Image 1: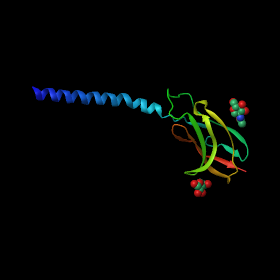
Image 2 (image 1 turned 90 degrees about the vertical axis):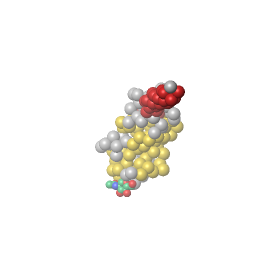
Image 3 (image 1 turned 45 degrees about the vertical axis):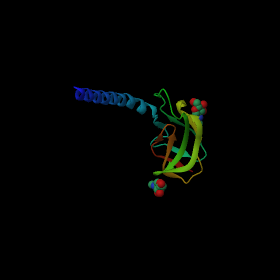
Length: 128
Ligand SMILES: *[C@@H]1O[C@H](CO)[C@@H](O)[C@H](O)[C@H]1NC(C)=O
Ligand SMILES: *[C@@H]1O[C@H](CO)[C@@H](O)[C@H](O)[C@H]1NC(C)=O
């Protein structure tokens, strides 16, 4: 009888632990905000020195964003450069104005938006 009770207790503890795991999972997913960058996109051509609004889809912000401040950095190929195009803006606004830096022209540039997480744009072109 005592044995059965212990087994039942262990079973209940197990079920409760499982239920809290299941309940916590969607929260954790919601908390990591990965808004897709909508501009620049595939086919975009930027001229050095020109000014553009980088935009991203902010239609589904979570209740709580761990890091609401964004940083946009330039990537070339599969490497993130140390060029910061914008920083200290609110990720929830969905856009930030950037000036195209004086870099080597090329067709494999992309942007990365850091807020809650890193999020890459498609590759685009920077020309002189
Ligand atoms: C960026 O967006 C703002 C707000 O819509 C607008 O006032 C501004 O002219 C835009 N800048 C460019 C370079 O498109
Ligand atoms: C893409 O970027 C990398 C740097 O990460 C460079 O070495 C490579 O030559 C580039 N490729 C093209 C097609 O521009």
